[in-house]
Image (cartoon, rainbow, N blue to C red; front, side, top):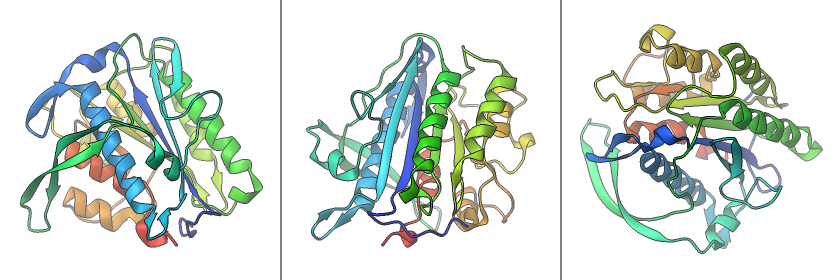
Amino acid sequence: MYSARISRKSPALFVILIDQSGSMEEPTSLYGRTVSKAEAVAATVNMLLGELLHRSRREEGYRDYFDIAVLGYHGERVEPLLSKGKRLVVKPSELYERDTPCRQVQRERRLPDGRTLFSVVEQREWIAPFAEGQTPMYAALLHAYELVRDWCAVRDHRECYPPAIFNITDGEASDSDEEGLSELAARIRGTGTDDGNALLMNIHISSDLTKTPVVFAASEEELPEQRYARLLYRMSSVMPPLYNENITALRGCAPGTFRGVSYNASMTDLIGMMNIGSVSVTLMD
């Protein structure tokens, strides 16, 4: 399980849901700078898209190892942020060919000895920050469920690596209660391919920088006694053992059982989490 080789004929599905509600205008920290949560999330997602593009690069060009969907949700809307019309998924080669603006951004990388290395790189901006309205999280998760279910039902995808879904949010849903969200999350986790179930991971963004950061929580008690923080923990997938080595390195802890959830994590840790939660380079042909 979770060992299928990834190729152009057997791609992996990668889905990102971005909370774009009005509260995402609130401040947070990005590499020591105060920015809105919407800006921080857009920067993080753009870095991850750049990483997926980098993984797809070969001498002859970009290979379409991934099907990628990014959906934003706000007000009463859920809309694709990379594609147009009814088509939700794009390929790495399409990302590369997009005419997108670039900007210089500071990146932070932790070295094995614990030191932090800063560098300035040119980053393409496929996703722009946006914040307005309420938080239709249920509708966004329902879109993700239908996308993943239909993708996994395609005969050519049955032996593919299981889909990964990230839900990036800063608050409670405006269109459902806890029971509805939990039931829908279970349906998402119940989808999958012959290689394993889909992995649902929740990233909880906070403006309260005094709270202890948590990434890949090992227990519900690691999270603050906050209703939605613990709900997102219960909604998240238990990570397969394949991921344990990288998770323990990121957390700096002993091996254990981890959920795909973070709370108040630094942007560096979020990028690390999303890189781990996406597909291992070792599985790519």
